[in-house]
Each structure stands twice: as C-alpha cells, then as structure tokens.
Image 1 (cartoon, rainbow, N blue to C red):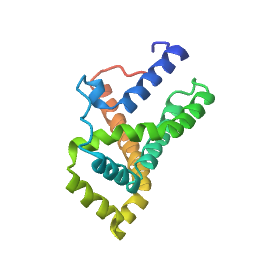
Image 2 (image 1 turned 120 degrees about the vertical axis):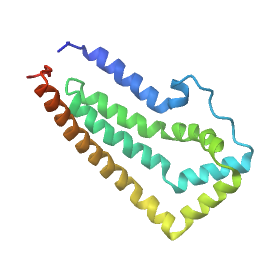
Image 3 (image 1 turned 180 degrees about the vertical axis):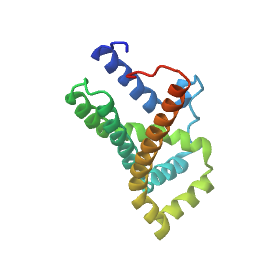
Length: 167
C-alpha cells in the first residue's frame, strides 16, 4: 500500500469539500444556473428551502459523512474534523444561497407556490420533521450495503486469484 502524507490527505479532503459545496455543474464545467426570474420567485425559493430545512439536511449529511471520513482517515487530527464541522455550520447560509439559482432553473413560480403550500401542510411539515432522520438512516443503510457488497466483491475476486490488499 502506498504511503500518503497527512498533507496530501488534507488537500484531498479539502478539494472534496470544495467539490461538494461547489456542486456538479461547476465541476463538469457547465455554466451556473440562471438567476431567478424575479424577487417573488427568489422569495419563494428561500421560503421553500426554509420549509424543507435544507440547511439542516445539508449539515446532517456533512456531519454523517464526517463520521465515516474520520474512521477512514484516523491519521488526520481531530482538530481538522472539528473545525470542518464548525465551518460547515457557519458557512451553511452561503451554501443555501447558492441553491437559489439551482431551484430557479428547475421550478416555475407556480410550482414553487405549490411546493411551499405542501410543506406548510401537516404532511409536508411531518416530512420536513422526519427527513433528517431518514437521511441519516439511509446513509447508514448505504454504508452497510456498500461494506457487504465490498466484502462479496473482494471474496469473488480473491477466488479468481486477484490479490487483495491485506491478503
């Protein structure tokens, strides 16, 4: 196994964080989404993001991912992970603001009104309440699925004669 310096890992993680926060359009070299049609559409998008608790969802996703990253990279100091989490929370309003043109590109003003109305309904509020837990549980299920699948693939390849790390 190749030895990787802590500095290299930190740079890789920081780049990954920038890629995550920048979004796929920037990474793929595509143009950023157009600005919202008007102030009313912008207000509706911000209202929708508030009602769906988009910031809370993003923080939950980041914090859940950080747990896995900490386990996968024990050589990175705890201080890095703690500071990353603090900054992710602090910078979340800036990230949420970057979502406004993305939503504007995909929803009309009429659709946004309907979405806001849904999230103000009892069912919509319930969905917003449970969605963070569903997200965490789904990420955990995905990690378990991926780990089991990884073991299966490694065992199958080993039976075919492939050398796996640590074998």
